[in-house]
Length: 115
Figure 1 (tube, rainbow, N blue to C red):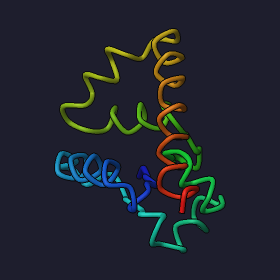
Figure 2 (cartoon, rainbow, N blue to C red):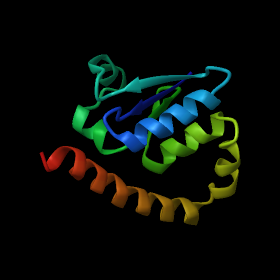
Figure 3 (tube, helix red, strand yellow):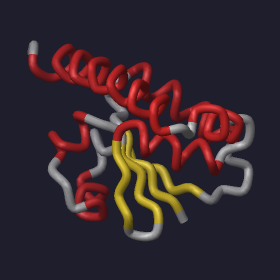
Figure 4 (cartoon, rainbow, N blue to C red):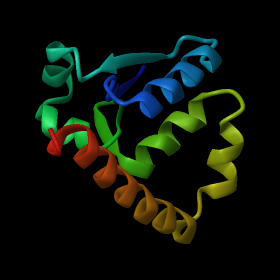
């Protein structure tokens, strides 16, 4: 079973996760809001700050983060599998990861650093 660790304090993240949850019809994914759930941090064995800074997915005790985490999740979810197959190329993933890191840093600073 895949385990998804997401920032439940982020409005965009929450909306996206709700879409994934609705489409995960076979219920093969366990969802952890790491903003509210201290037990989830023990499962992933990472700090809250590290988990809030980027998206994480655990599959068979391997932890994926950033774009790699999305790809692991997309492969499992109806309608998102197409993204997995369309974009799962090294150069595309490199570019997507570059964009993701810029966005993730901006999002983290906006939600947590400027308060």
